[in-house]
Image 1 (cartoon, helix red, strand yellow):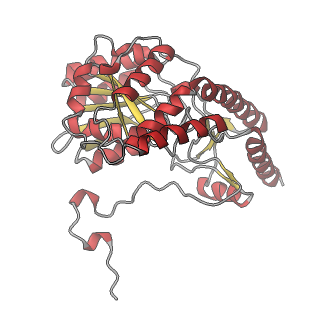
Image 2 (cartoon, protein in one colour):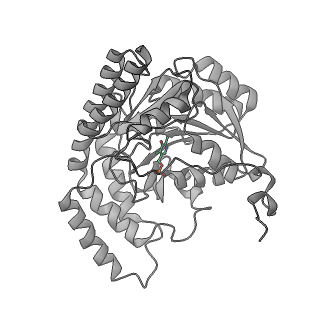
Image 3 (spheres, rainbow, N blue to C red):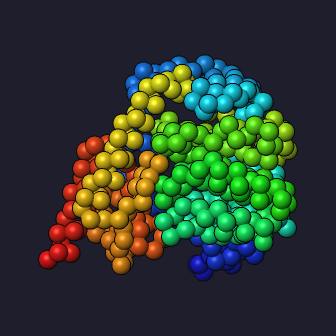
Length: 370
Ligand SMILES: *Cc1c(COP(=O)(O)O)cnc(C)c1O
């Protein structure tokens, strides 16, 4: 049989020769490569999910609540409680992971003939979702230390006049938080240039030393804050992301969302998880302490480490990043090679997992000394 590849099919030109998002899912003892929360959901929450899902199952002959009103109300309550800014149902929208939220935003504000900018290295999915929605991608600059250079970033916005601006804070894969002043300066630059929509991706904000940028949505209808339950809530398998913005943004994304996109099972599960917010945020505190320990110990070993506000740490520098990644993997620990030359990223796991990782890199150091 002749082998048929993607490029033999009549796929869209911009998809030709491209690769899908593909963090390796390898079966190794210590998996610290995709910024997941290492703690399984607590048993009382698992029981509550079973209860709420059973309830939802009795109504599965019907379509789910298209507007996810109860869930959005609870997400608004959570944001109000933790984000130092009051938001309500009409400010919040939810979808299957924040990736779907971002896709809906690009379908609404990007698309063919339009462009989006991100300051790289940053979350690779921003560029991939842009491509999938036919949005042109512009790679904006970042400083050597991975902070955002406000002047250079504003200049890139003024030059390219993008329709969508992504600001990831804390940034993935570097862990770098972005100051509110920087976001405001780039928002002003984006409004002067176009005006365009500024998406602040706060997937990791619960792990940050800084407050959420949520209050910035006040009086700025073109500013969107995107969030997820995949990281802090320890529910990557749930697929629940959400945004907070002016109610007009929530109305706008409904023009592109598929009807009934959030299943009744997803809504029930997310609601159960939100009932256990305090327990889950307790794990976040433990992970922040472990993140700080990784930073301290890696620096003590002589590695360079980027300051981190997330649940992961970027460390280096290595002459051959991929070879180092492999040697850590050979010791049973999977970290992430994000393609940032010289740097690797490790997710903060349980204390035992982090010890295993630190033992592995300690051995690497010793080998190099020999
Ligand atoms: C993990 C991550 C997301 C979350 O994606 P989900 O679809 O919600 O799982 C979004 N943005 C960034 C920067 C991330 O690292």
